[in-house]
Amino acid sequence: MKAFTYERATSAKEAASAAVRTPGAKFIAGGTNLLDLMKLQIETPQHLIDVNGLGLDKITPTADGGLRVGALVRNTDLAADARVRKDYGVLSRALVSGASGQLRNKATTAGNLLQRTRCPYFYDTTKPCNKRQPGSGCAAIGGFNRNLAVMGTSDACIATHPSDMAVAMRVLDATVETVNAASQTRAIPIADFHRLPGATPNIETSLAHGELITAVTLPKPIGGTHIYQKVRDRASYAFALISVAAVIQPGGRGRLAFGGLAHKPWRVESAEAQMPNGAKATASAVLAGARTTSQNAFKLPLVERTIGAVFEEAKA
Amino acid sequence: MHQDEGFPVSRRGVIAGGVASATLVAAPAAAQAQTQGTAQSAPPTMPVTLKVNGRTTKINVDTRTTLLDALRENLKLTGTKKGCDHGQCGACTVIVEGRRINSCLTLAVMHEGEEITTIEGLGTPEKLHAMQAAFVKHDGYQCGYCTPGQICSAVATLGEIKAGIPSHVTGDISAQPTVTTDELRERMSGNICRCGAYANIIDAIHDVAGTERSA
Ligand SMILES: Cc1cc2nc3c(=O)[nH]c(=O)nc-3n(C[C@H](O)[C@H](O)[C@H](O)COP(=O)(O)OP(=O)(O)OC[C@H]3O[C@@H](n4cnc5c(N)ncnc54)[C@H](O)[C@@H]3O)c2cc1C
Ligand code: SF4
Ligand code: FES
Ligand code: FES
Image (cartoon, rainbow over all chains, first blue to last red; front, side):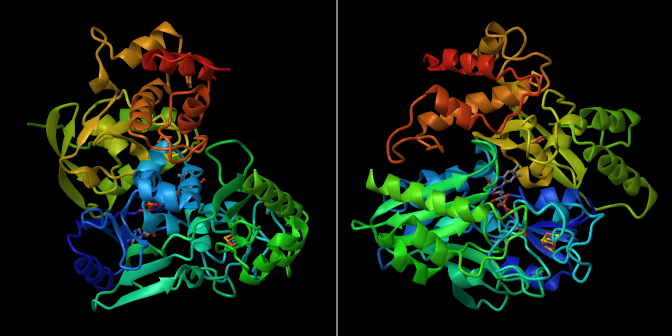
């Protein structure tokens, strides 16, 4: 780990100001992704701003009948919240399918959204990676890419976003709330929060430098059957190969979002019209324009079968 | 309150790090961090007060020091183990403010004044915690390296079930979860045992919970 200075922020504004004032500053929340990457010198902040003391750890009702989830709410607490379990079951299910009990006790709402890819070459500092070192190339294209993206990829990067929570938030149409050093707030729809890699895979979200996430809001409950189906190499404590977050209404209409397919939680709203026509029709609409490698082409039939399993579960 | 011996660059520290690291990533990194500290301009340090097993200690640490390294190197509480140093094995599990966490993925300076319980605080050789006694009774280990983390995790797991926190295998996500073998397996998946003592670990936890193994 590279040496860094450390401060505990006591207000959101102070944290955001410190982030723009101090060169090489980064926020630290649970630390479970940032410290992992700092140990490998993939992240090398010169200054850490601890945001754990900001009081952003509450879940409160919103005026329009939804929930505001503070940026520092731990993954365990969000999954266990009675309102989330009752009205946003897909979110609880996605959260408890991720990481381990120990990690979920530390991991925060904001940190989870901002966790970085698990592409093996991003982690290997001896290999080219446009995300880690812009312009160095991409070792994954033509390398070991079994678990990398098939949708929305570019010639610069085929990494996936590894979060389970974010996929559920995408299906629920959540909004990310932020504040900057000038006390300006923004509400970013989750669909616009994560970016596709394009030519600049090092830029992963629409956050500006020093912009602090304060909360994620969930719109008022939409009912339906909530399912999160995660397919992985082992039954627990593994990242998804693919995952499906689903909210299915009586009659078979509903919403679907996917993990493990792209650089962001993947959702094709227009494909959802195909849901009453079955898994095959739905999958081919979701996967239009897919770009696969010989190693990850298995994800396409896997998506169709998993959608099929989700539809069956919703009927049961 | 008592003052520790600081954070010396000890040969033992470097060797212990090397032996302990399963991945071999941690050893050179730890060695490098320590030599950097002495060679170039001194890296930033900070005072932090740790409350471990009911005892309060004020130490001055390099800001990079993980809670795990502070426990082992500064406080000499070597019961907590370093396996992977990357959140992947659970050997470093301790209980902070009533919650199990991986002490390798958090900084010591982030735990000012918080209540920390390590394996040494759960019980003593003379007066074992019920979970420690159950691990002995059921042979819940072979080499014992993962055991402190397993026991801290197991104690917290029963607490999490009691508190109604759902898991991936909980059938009805809104209902109160119960202590079943499936629940224990899922909830303990963050603790890897290289010796494969899993079946006996599950028996030990069932014993403490007063429940029966199902399959
Ligand atoms: C072994 C292992 C297995 C895992 N398995 C899974 C899995 O199966 N599924 C899954 O989804 N995840 C998994 N994870 C990842 C885990 O979910 C993330 O590490 C965690 O959610 C990150 O949250 P954090 O609070 O610890 O973030 P931190 O590490 O503290 O921060 C992450 C990033 O977010 C930034 N940040 C934090 N808070 C804010 C804020 N308020 N505003 C702006 N920026 C902020 C930080 O600067 C940093 O860049 C796994 C992790 C490990 C180590
Ligand atoms: S896929 Fe993206 S993250 Fe992986 S090596 Fe290529 S540029 Fe880096
Ligand atoms: S040492 Fe492996 S999880 Fe911390
Ligand atoms: S008892 Fe040897 S690693 Fe678990």
